[in-house]
Length: 378
Image (tube, rainbow, N blue to C red; front, top):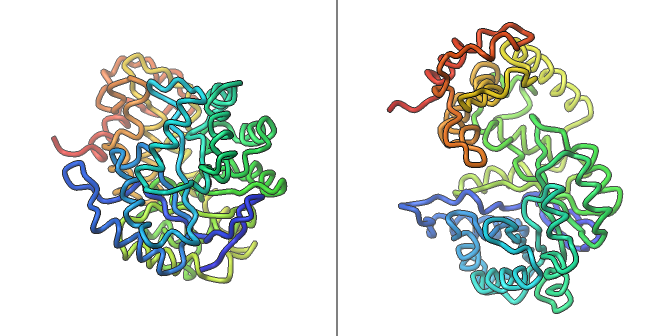
């Protein structure tokens, strides 16, 4: 396993981190035997960065990780997060209570890296207000319950820099970055330059690169054996990345990802350029179906047209049919902020969208095709 220093924390962490969001579940409960076996195998192979959160796996992730840590805590780096939503008051006392609950669930004396969870600029301003949750985390740090402060991120790329500038004592960011989404690339370069740790979530693009297809192998023909290997090597080849998290659920997944992360040689500049050129070809092909411009929106019946077509492009262009179907049916694009149904099937053929499309896409017919191809049989 290769190790890197996590920004100004001084922590020496494994290039591969274990994300605990995707443990196998049985009847709403974590399959602890399988999960702990995977966690222990990762520890045995040199993985030492473990990332969890209060709500992961029906709020059972922290407890499961805690069981796996018993007798093995030394040398391991544990990260968890403060959840700033729901009925949370976003106050310092609330944060202190949540930290104590996390420590209790994991049976730990301290948390190595404590994140403000899922920050956008608006939410950050709330947690960072005087007397807010971030002040509670700072107080916990002073008392030794938390060693280092961090944030996970979902917003426009430049807001990473804004948050670090607004709260310089934050030492780590956890954000998205992968072959299909390089929007944060410049911001993580800034973070690394300013001695901040950079942890990457979603290196396989939220499952969009989970299947090994001819199209994904053609991104670097003859040089990779699987799409996940390519995706992970791409992320770890970025010198500004400290850790790439993988949501591993089995011993086999652990062993495959550790083998990839342990490779000494990164992708070369030429190989990265080759991948970028092939992705640009795929993008041009995808743009024949939909560029994602959004001119067709809003749909009066709640259909998220660009997102539906984005998943169809996963199927048609990258051959990631299984991933596209899973994401479509899991509700990744279907239910947002109280909207119950954004499925393509919600289209009633009112015709408002088609005159707005600059590419003159037959949207109604393609929505029918999308649902026909991607929806689970009723």
